[in-house]
Amino acid sequence: MSDSGQTGECGLGRILVVDDDAAVREMLVRVLTGEGYSAREAANAEETLRVAAAVPLDLVLLDLGLPGRNGWEILARLNRLKPGLAVVVTTAWPDQTPAAQAAGASALLEKPLDFPMLLRTIARLLAGTPERRLAPLRIP
Image (cartoon, rainbow, N blue to C red; front, side, top):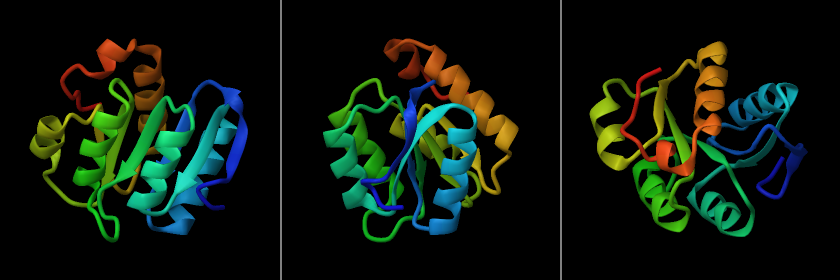
């Protein structure tokens, strides 16, 4: 599925899944739509920023290890483009919590992802107001 692909109705929230690994994106979209979320996907920085500018979103799952621009650059652009948008950083890189806090991430989850933890984190963030989404990073 490309960045233009969307699965599900608005449901519980509109989520953009950003990962350069197609299998990971597809799995996350399946899990999220199975839980009632509307999910789109993007494979790189350009797709991510294009989708974020064009469609309403409630949350972005953002992998740090993307080709081209890294996830930190994309997070900074998303924070400027859509203040209050919840962004959950996902990474296989260890010890990224201080950087995630400094960059304004809403949450940080390490890979391999724990799906119950992921879903709890998303539900918590989407239940909050935009101001709460900008609160300091909490490790789930």
